[in-house]
Length: 456
Image (tube, rainbow, N blue to C red; front, side):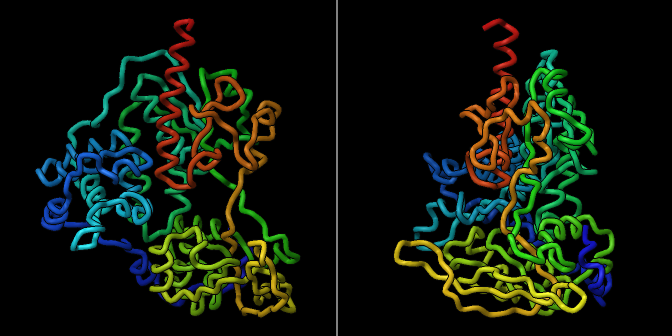
């Protein structure tokens, strides 16, 4: 995966020293802190924090349970709506969702209730004797789910709760999707992604088969023929291209590939770390990449974006993390040329300054500049891996741009096939949104199968 960086040296620091740079971004609350913070909640009747939550968690209710020291009650309320409540408490951009909507932003304190940390407190400290959710009587139906990420596993869990059997097909060696392979190591620590999957599977009725890749050793036509329904939670597995000559040169690669290798590395000191790095992009992946390569020991990290700070996909909170980690952020510049050394390896990049023209469109100014670098990481977005939808049946799926078209119940154009998460057009590319898609799709799948069974 990191072959293009084969010539770049490894860190001089030890694995233990590097691991210390990837501890929790925000330390968890202790019991006393949780009690104090939960007391700040006003338990609003028409709570705006709940209304804005993509997964419809009753925020005021779970915080009241924490205040009343009913931790299991708080956790159950969260997980009923969002089975990935633990990871979402760590990675969800609450600064633009529930915490931004908190009414305490507008009182004398001017500070929201720390909803994410309270949600984490509840899910980290739950102590259920048995799994908190029980399966309904068997329906005799079996559903295939493609993709063991947040959307697919959320769908599988809700289908299992409703009494269906589920087989999840995953291309990677482990389940978890983005949580396992794509989130910054300092956001989900200590194998949390796998522990969350193990908890989810505790409901029973879910089988996961890894190493199964749609379009290679797994085909949609076979799933459609052999299962009562199919849910596609494919995510976005193909990194977009810059469209520049030299894009395949050693030293230039997709940020998601490096992040995946970092998250799976048993020895951080074995990773190649450039002395000077450029990250191209403006979303959370770009921030995660820039911060992490700096924490691994890169001396100069420059993030470059073609527009201004306010247009960045990464929130101001994420931008502040980058700045706190000494990431240099260059805006209003777009890549123009990959610069190579005498061995054909990346030595930097030439950029053109940009501006908005009178028509409100981004345009190049003609003025260029260069930034020296030993490696360049692309974080300019991802799209569907077209190979996964290459079999004859899959080609009949209707598209919305480069994503799969679904109706308001996550049905695709093919009867019996549903889709959700990042691979469909509705919503934002957020973990919490993917979880909600999976949950709602499961309800639609179950309802449609029952209606078909009853001949409605």
